[in-house]
Each structure stands twice: as C-alpha cells, then as structure tokens.
Length: 256
Image 1 (cartoon, rainbow, N blue to C red):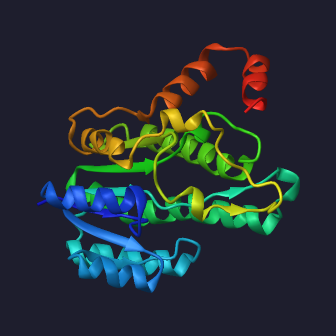
Image 2: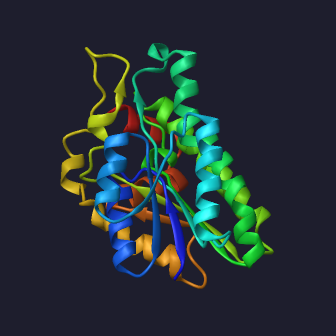
C-alpha cells in the first residue's frame, strides 16, 4: 500500500482527495491546522497530523511524524494547503505578504525538503502541488496570492529539473473556479472593496471532483504531465498567456 501525505484536509480539494485516495487503496495521512478539524478527520478514520504551515517548528514536527508513521517509505506528498490574501497591493502590508508566502510557498519548500530523502532512498516518489489559474496570469486584487503561486510554479519547475535523473516526479495541478470554501476563507484587506470572481466565472465553475482524474494521473502515470489544468478558464488563460501580446492580455484582465 502506497502512502501519501496531504496537507490542507479540513475541506475542499484536500478533504475530497483524502477520501477518494483512501477508497482507491492508498494509505492517506491527512493534515489540518485546527483541533476541531483534526478530531473530525480522526473520526472519519484518517491518520491525522496537526500542521500549521506558518510555523517552521510545526512543519518539522509534522515531517518527523510522517516519516515515523511510514517507516521512511513515503510515496507521495500532495502540497495542497494554502489561503488567499486579496486586495490591491497598496493595501497589503509586508506582514500580510510574508504570511501569504509563509503558508503558500516557504512551508512547501521546507516540508518537501524534509520528506524528499525518504523518496530518494526508496527510488521513487511523487511531489504534487495545488497551484492556481493565478499562477498562470495575475489579476487585479489578487497580487499577493498570485505572487505566491507564481513562485510555486517556478519552484516546481526547478525541482523537476533537479530531480530529472531520479524516479521522483513533480507535478502542478492548476485549478480554475471550483465550488469550494476557498473564497469564503480569503483574507480581504479592503472590506469596502472585496475582490470577487466576475459573474461569468460561474458559468465555468466546476465541482472539486474535477481535480480527481488529474490527481490520479499525476500519482499513477508512468510519465505524468508537468501541469494539469482544471476548468476551461484555466486552459484558456494558459493559451492566452502564451499567444497574446502582453498589452492585449492586460486589457482583457483589467476589464474583469
């Protein structure tokens, strides 16, 4: 039975993935930040670890716990946890930006480096990240969150290249609009000017289950894709970013 450690399992993609992969035959070790979510996951039968990604010591302890539980035989790490700070860049303090990167980027680097030796020693592994459509394109009001995802994309590309001579694969899942609690948990820096998805996004919003086929392929394919784009909007954004002139993309994005 292959083991996978999933972060951010209190709700949304993380919880869905934990349930689906457990049913698929994986040994799932789930993590969450809050005690009541921990108790709920335990009640549901998951091996669960409390993890605060904004606390470097918590990351260290969680990694130790994972390695102990798996006897240093971890197959996959799904770096899924994260949150968004929304608002104009002029409204975001350095402290808020540091918190955004601490959870969405710095902790991923730290956790992965702590768990990577277990994959290297067994000669195989998968490292999968939940990125975002705003890891492809930057939009007004989402600059802090987008910057953390752009960083994650570059980090993943570099990690993939550095592991090219191993059997450890690095993949990105890039969701567009999904029906999860993510938006309700966003930290809005301007309460009188909340950043919301444009009405047209509702037409292309998918249930979180849309991520599962991508995740299965990333975990199980002999040659997984580098990027898995979820929702039509994400695919369109990637094409537009590659083909359209920057100034035209600016006009399109500024009108949203």
